[in-house]
Length: 511
Ligand code: BG6
Picture 1: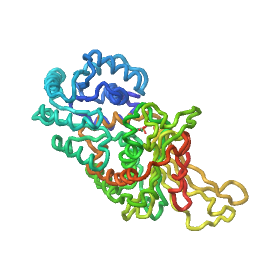
Picture 2 (picture 1 turned 90 degrees about the vertical axis):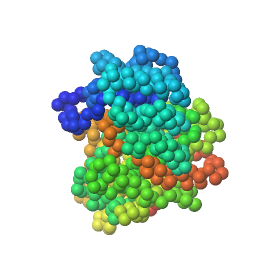
Picture 3 (picture 1 turned 60 degrees about the horizontal axis):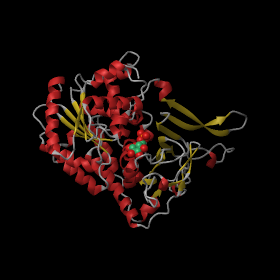
Picture 4 (picture 1 turned 60 degrees about the vertical axis):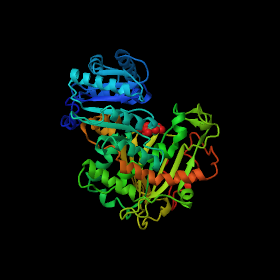
């Protein structure tokens, strides 16, 4: 990625206005997968691009026995393996690595927090970080509350000098009740303004562009409502299976893993009203109103509006793959869903009666996330050579990943003496229009947290509201006989029942 040069004016312009205070990031779970795959590559890139404050430091806190040098070597290896911005630059790495420290420690031992406190004071002295701290909980959620209490007991959660912020990773609870309990436990120690619940979808450039697309253009907003929109589809399809996350995924399933967080957030951004300003509170308030307007599915509506699935063996990307129940670490009789499709409604003046179809699944034929706005048909068809049902609806497709961009499908006259109507597409692609790689979602979000900007983080109310929509579905499933899984072959678009969710002869876009 280009550094801060005039080749990169957009980024330069935005970033130069925003430099975080010198600070230390304490990573709990520093020897884990998330730190290696996402956090270190993102922090290193930020450092290489000189977007981090002077003296920025990391303190790794984990049980694995290591000293600073071993931690630095392990992190370098991680950046080499998982960084997406080419080979590691020696000079840039050395300058970044000077700020990496490590503490072999147990998250349940109070004395280890005393050691952490001394180490942080030492880092403050050496590197001028002034008591500013980000605590990143890259650990299983069962450890969140314990760590937060220990930070409090050790006097590390609040302080006279500097600011303290806490980043937590999903899952934020397992259902509404547990989410409330977790929020309560954390809020006894940290104020809501100090808590940053990370949802990496919100850090994706294309998701942020959704607001620019909607509110920096005058032409879309007037038709962005029930008068013109037939329905909305949001798809997050993955070709990968459960990978090496069996124990997490068995407990989670697709609804908790993807819908509670990423898809709910995307839905909220798609459906929200224009905020009074782009301030964090204003945007988050509008998103919350959308979620609050979605009536939870209860009773028979769970079965008529939700389809769950689990992949059996099949073929993906030309390779034969095992079914979910035969994956390592998975219960051979597992009833965990790896696919879910839902029909939801946003019952407000803008959207009443417009279905929002959401679907996500593993081992689908393509890796892609997109939002499709399908507009209503023209009121009558004047071109008799093409029957009405053969005229394609206008589709606005917002491709979140990969091949990021936006396309609009409309009808045109096919050249020739007769009037035959055929669909054509206008296409915008990030790669050709901007010709620059966007920062990874983690880069953006880590930087925003250091800057104290919570706009792209999930607020407590949104998390709990999303759970209140989904918990009745989980409860209904739990009370029903075990589903007959597997019910879709790996490499297909999920169970056939997902197609019948769409009403009025509509169908899922199959890219
Ligand atoms: C994570 C889920 O939050 O998002 C994973 O836990 C999923 O199961 C991933 O694979 C998808 O993220 P992305 O950015 O690849 O769409």
